[in-house]
Image (cartoon, rainbow, N blue to C red; front, top):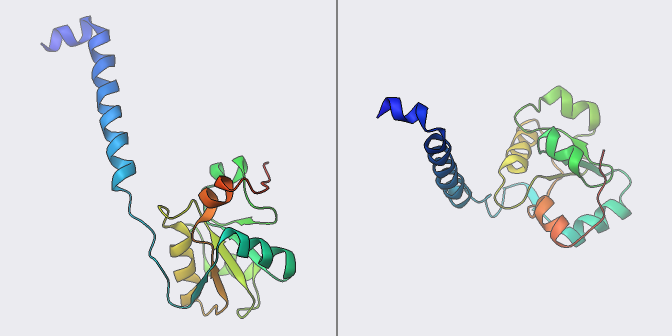
Length: 149
């Protein structure tokens, strides 16, 4: 059997394909949903996010997604700050005023990155936290303007 596995590479490719097919199908369904709310954060829709961006020049927008996702498209003016690498000093450099408004987003309701980033900001005494929970998915589903690099 072991010998045939290497002689017949099409069997090897087929097995790998089947494993990938089943593993990717399960991971998408098993992904957790972001919480419905986060204490201390105001949830906004895409339309409310647009209103905040247009009418509040002090608003800081943090995109908590991976850099590879950010360069493919993001909200204009957003600062890429991956939640797992976000440090207090990083946030303080872009948001020195801890009472100023900061809007966080990531990929949407199946993404936990922005929720995690908000929890960190809250621990660091930031008080005006806004969560665009629908995130990138809601933004692009509504065909709102995007910036690419």
